Length: 220
Image (tube, rainbow, N blue to C red; front, side, top):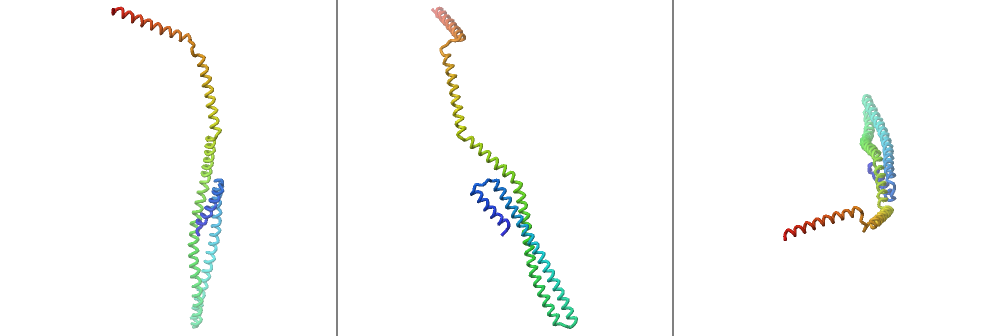
């Protein structure tokens, strides 16, 4: 299983638990980063062990190759001494060592491929961890902003606001009543300005009436 598959399973499990418990988003972000850091430490430890295994294999391969060369030298020596039987036996031992070395070489190729994948995944995990830490502040800020907005909206729609507006409207109605009472006291009272205006209107009517009479007398 890839370290990212395992890591994803861990994160998804923890996130689901947090959502079920309605945990604080800040805790969720910290947990995700902590899981990434723990996974990175674990993978690095695994990589170190794999690298140690690789070095051990390389030593074994080198030992088998060196021993096979020694048996080949012994086979040459036996032939020089006209001991073909010993030369044949020496070559058999050499071939056994070569076969052992070939098996280990195949294992070494697989380990090197595994190490290359691990290095790639570690690099990706490091990048993702750096990105997560960089985005952590932005995520927390968004959570704080959303929480603050939610509180404001909750207060805006609370009964206290409605009650305050009702009291305000009552005060407005009381002021309207007071103003109406003041205006009612002035009803039916002629002020000096009103009386003068009435005189001016009466004079105008008198002038128009006189003009109308004069016109009618001329027409007779």
